[in-house]
Length: 316
Length: 249
Figure 1 (spheres, each protein chain N blue to C red):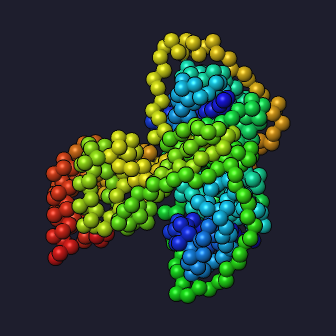
Figure 2: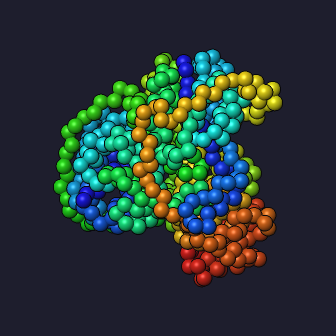
C-alpha cells in the first residue's frame, strides 16, 4: 500500500498544510511519496526532501504547470496517482480545487475534510458546519482524502535531505485556462491557519477603520488577524481573513473573538481552538457558549485596555 | 449562450440540527428546507447575466425527490427559464451528482454551468470540480467575480492567500463563493409567473449512469460539549487568567 501526497507550495517553499497532511498519512501507516508540481519549483522540491516520513519526492517541473491550474495539474495527479492506494492533499483552497477533479478522472469518490482516521477505509469528517461528525467508509480502490490540517500534527524537518528527487517529465498541456492575475494579502503577521494566537473581529467593530483596532493587540501577541463572515461581507476585512464553515479553519492555542456573535458558520472554523476568549457587549451572545473566558462590555473600551495590559505583562 | 444552474434542496442553515436517536443520520423530517445558499447565488448570477443579454436561456436542475420541485420553482421565480428534476429517492453522492449533471449538460448543449461551491448540509465542496473533470471543461471555483468576454470568462477566485483571476475558455464550469452577489428578494408576481414555467421530470434510470453510493455512512455523532464560558469582570483578570491559568501567553 502506498500514499501519494500532493504538495502545496509557491515554488519556493512547501506550505504548512502539507506538513499536516503528511502527519495524517503517517497515521495511515503506509509508504508516503510527495508530488511537487509547478514551474521552476526546484527550491520547493529541495525543501520537500527535508520532510520526515517521506519516501520519495516526485517533481514535475515544467512551464505547462505554472500556477498549478486545475485542468492539467489534476490530469497529472490522476496519471501518477493511479498507481497508489491513497491520494491526499490539505483541505485548503488548493486541495479543494484540485482533488475532486482528480477523483472524477479516476472514477472514485472523495472524502473531504477528514478529521480522524479510524481505519484503512473509515474516516471521520464534519458535516452541517461541524454540528455533526460523520463516520464514513469508502469502498473505492483508490481513496482520495482532503485533510483538515488542524486535526493532525505537522511532521518535522530533518537537518539534511534524506531522499533523492525523481523527475516526472510528462508535460500535459492546458489550452483551456490561463492565469491572469493574483492579489495576495501582504502581511508581516503569522499566517492565519498556522498562528499560535488568532484575534478575530466581527460586525461589532462597525467599520473597516475600527477593524484596525485589532492590530495593536495582535502586535502585542504576535497574533494573526481573522474575521467573521459578517465582517468580510461588510467590507471591514479582506476575504482571506474569513474564519468559518466556508472560510478558513483554525485551531490556535488562543483565539480571541471580538464583536463576533457566534453564528454556527463562524464557530465551525474556530471551535477546536485550545482556549477561546470572547469579547462582546451582548450578554447572550452565542459565542459565549463555546468560550472559555468571557468579557461582557464595549469592545472599544476593552481593546485599548487589553493592549495596555498585555504590554505591561510582556515588559514585566 | 445557454446556461445550466444546479440547485440542491438542503435543511435551512438556521434550523437546529438533530441527530437521529440511533445515530444513523440527521433528522430531516419536519425540518424547514431551502435552496442551498451558494446555489441561490448561482441562480442570481445567471439571472443577472440574462438581464445583461449575455445569456439566452437558463435551465435549472435539481436531483432528488418530488419535493425538489419546490426548490426549482424558487429558482424559476428568481428568473430561470425552465427546470429539470432528476427524480430519485436514492442517496446521490457527489460523483453521481456530477455524472447526472454532465449528462444533462450534454443533452442541453450548454456553454456554461454554474453552481454553489458547496452544499451547507454535507459540506463536500466537490460536485463542480468533478463535473468539470468529467466533461473535460475548465473550472473556475470559489468565484467572487465573473466577467464574460472574448468567447471566454474571467473568474476571480477566493483563495487562501487572497484573490486569483483565471481566464477560462467556454464551455466552462463555475462554482460560486459568498461574495459573488446578493440574491434578490422574490416578488409575488414572479412567484405567480414561475408557476407557468415548465419543470421536466426525468427519472434517474433513464440517464443510464451509474449512481450507486461509493461511501457508506456508518454513524453520525455530536461533537464535544460546550465550554464553561467563565465570565470575567476586568481585562486585568483576563490577562492574568491567560498567563497563569491557561498559560497561552
